[in-house]
Image (cartoon, rainbow, N blue to C red; front, side):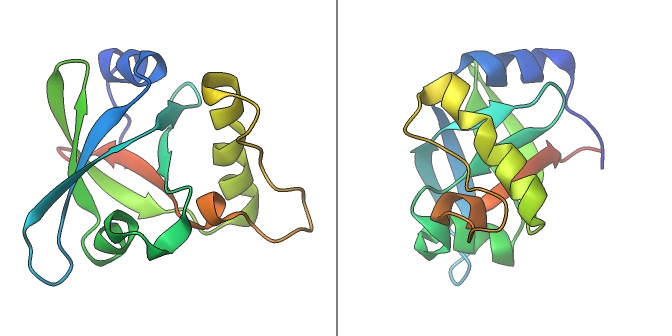
Length: 127
């Protein structure tokens, strides 16, 4: 999978909230929600703080693609559900510096938080 261009990564680092559009897992209809988004320098992550029970993570599990409205433009993506615990904790650790200390990663050996269970890495759709 490829990497987003620098302008997209910079926008992810700056934007506090983005519109995430996914496709209904049963209907195929577009659905848009507002979510938080983070980058670790070159990898982009999103997550549902309420876990996999929300509609949009379920949609991405079924059809791992969509768009984010980011910095005044629409960016198409493909996604990958993050299932490795260490990687899920890494993605979770990116939220605290951007959004505040109430978003904390789980500790090694502890169960993953709901947000870590519903973490996704985004990739450019056109690669």
